[in-house]
Figure (cartoon, rainbow, N blue to C red):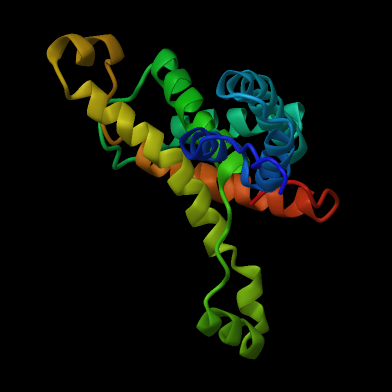
Length: 204
């Protein structure tokens, strides 16, 4: 009878699993499992492998020039959304729009690295089969991108409500990004749809 197999602690493996992008999760976990010698060595290996896996997945999902274009789209969309006739709050200044753009872009980056699209509902599949024109309405990608950008902006709003000092630091007019992010979601989803026909690895 051979010696018992040494395996990583379940807790460490669970933490690393959550940090890894889903696209490479099982492969990287398998490599770390084979190289396991001790908890400290496992942590050291994970500390070097996980950032590399995240960066690799980010680079494959969206090239840097395209990411910069998305940031510009978000900024312009927030600018436009804050200046419609029924604007939600006072118009923001450029620094506020830049802050919201960075926060929304961070949510978009997280989406591209970690999001796994669930299978489509059977009823939606049947509707698209009976009504082919429904395939041209990208409601699902638009909703997913809007959610990815909106949630971190919502967190920023909540942080701004915690106290006068924090609110003064952020100085963000609440609600001004709602319409802007809807515009950005539609534009980015449409752009990704067009780019994706030539580059299948682009997300959403």
